Image 1 (cartoon, each protein chain N blue to C red):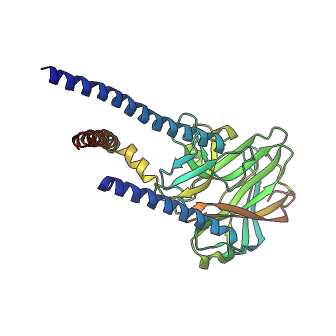
Image 2: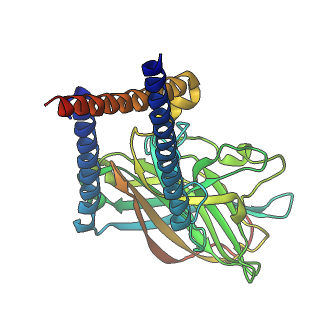
Image 3: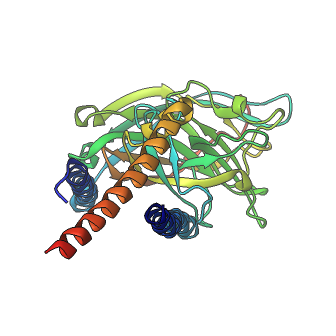
Length: 167
Length: 196
């Protein structure tokens, strides 16, 4: 009952249980943070808008993204993954979501930024429905904790549209 | 001669019962672990409720050796979710983020494109030949939580199987020797008891 084996076993079990409990309440503490991120996106330029050889529309555009995500960071945050997606519907598809740009924010200091970028990923439709198309730009964020539950949310900005003719 | 015969008989009979009890206890432990695993599969709705991150393609968020908790619901798949999927013909599941979604009206079928956060290119190179989209049936679950470092145990045991054997051997030895000590203590107690 007092051998090294029993003692180390008891110690190890207790240590692991205590660690699991601490990680659980750390993750739980994230619920109490007050979060109010903000973002503004403008389309600066439509660089290219054409129909590909196999019939799908493709757009290349330059965006101006101004965002403040500092309130998303808590002591349990490892990084915040943020991306901007275009959302629209077509006769064939009830929902299309195309990610245009993403970034990893490792620290709170970098979470307030303004950048001008052209789309990192190709904006290609399944079909040729993009002329004159109205779409939403959504800013999504995905908070990855140091331990525990991840959470994600988004801000939807409606009212953007593509030109009526190819360029 | 008779005394030796008696002792041998008593030892044999005790040993058989003991061995049987040990086997049954071991079987119970293994079975209850299996029950817990299967129950987890039911609750989370996926075939593998916990996976180990094997590559660095999702760094710095998920490093090699982290474990991910998965959950699968019938909710539609949306951009930004971290999903675990199997490609036909490959048995290692991949954990990456959804960057494009095209969902059909009426049927709800969905075409999905994924990409690892740290990779430069999207996953088209990882899909089967000629495949350019993932569909719902490829996706096994969404990552909902994670725990750092714990997966290294699994990675070491898979990549250096000798460690697995050493561990199981040591465990087996522990079980056998601890039972023997209990048995000897019982016998000693009996002798002392009868002496006084």
